[in-house]
Length: 96
Image (cartoon, rainbow, N blue to C red; front, side, top):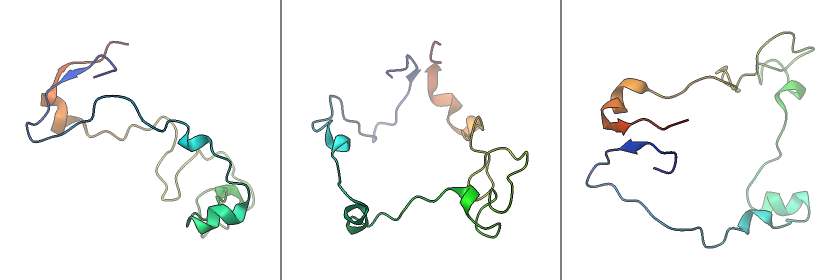
């Protein structure tokens, strides 16, 4: 892999090698909020501005709570990888 890790891949898996064709796709100026809504994307609302019933950060002050997702999972620095299942596929770990 690009990270330097070497791993086994199942024979039925597929991958694409090469470059992205339209790399400036994300740099387009949409223009106004309504144009984003036409694409079906709703406004982004911060958790702090919500009510306590809607988000763990909602309500008066956030206090000393660490950042969490709307479902209460820690957001920053929290490992989400399930280690045991795919450890056997890694031949050589990535070099830092």
